Length: 432
Image 1 (cartoon, rainbow, N blue to C red):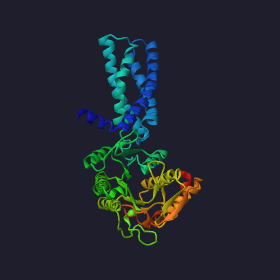
Image 2 (cartoon, rainbow, N blue to C red):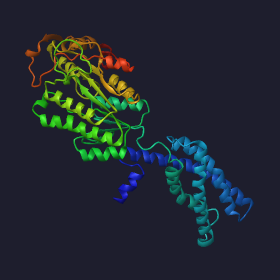
Image 3 (cartoon, one colour):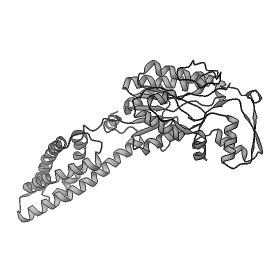
């Protein structure tokens, strides 16, 4: 427990934060070596011309090197500090006065008591005072730096199809981020969103500004056989996150779906249209929406459809794989909607996370098509000769009932001033 508290105090909560802390120490050490060289140069010059004046040499060396140390640390080590220049410099002098007092006492101890050479004693002091100096700088001089996680964005489902591209976009914008998924790897931390205790511990420890909730149970047909698991992940897991978001005052971006509608008619659904899901998956995602609305005021609910991207499996990849061994494919033609390319959506989600324009949105690539039309475009753009035969939904029975109308209106995006995603044909071309 003692060690855990120390690690928490040092902001080391996972592998990523450990390496960030290690890198910070490494940079601080380089700055320290630079200023140590400056300090030792001044010290040696003074004691050479004024033998026995080691206290004066030590004092002058520390005073001159403190300005250099402050400037270099502010520029390269504690870059997120919000402390003003002169207050920071004043704090730095206080920190180094403490360091100077410690160094002087130790210097007297080494030379007068232990009998170590005047030229060797300063080197011993550096080894002892360096870590002390680092901690004083971190927790006093630059303590007013942004609070941990103040600008951090957490992505759940970060190893998934959408989460992967969201993390890429955040990194591209140099936005501090963390990723979680059900299984850890080199880039994400393991977090089971259905475990309320684990979610609470992780979120309260890291205190993200925004959570982009991409984690979900998305096996639409399998959900009919596993309704409890589907509901536990999509509804209860989302509720766990929403509840704790409220406690830590974080905003939440919840990724929902066209499946919350019944798919009747042929007009695009507005964001406030009647929700009437016709599948287990759709019902679980609607329950997730309701949890977000119940607990939060600072939220985004973003409904998407027909997702495809570089990671994971999707319709485009399936069509391309089947076309390798078949001359023709039967594809449903009476389900109409819009594909959503994850890199395009990731840009919008990151824009939202920095906008404060909370609300409910529909976000897909522009244009409508049937699955058969999408498959035909896939074959044409990939220059594949596989023939696509349009069929009806009834000719291709599935366990889960699909909405025939998945058209989503983008009026809410326009009203909030967000840019619509590019045409789905263009997105497909870039994907291929």
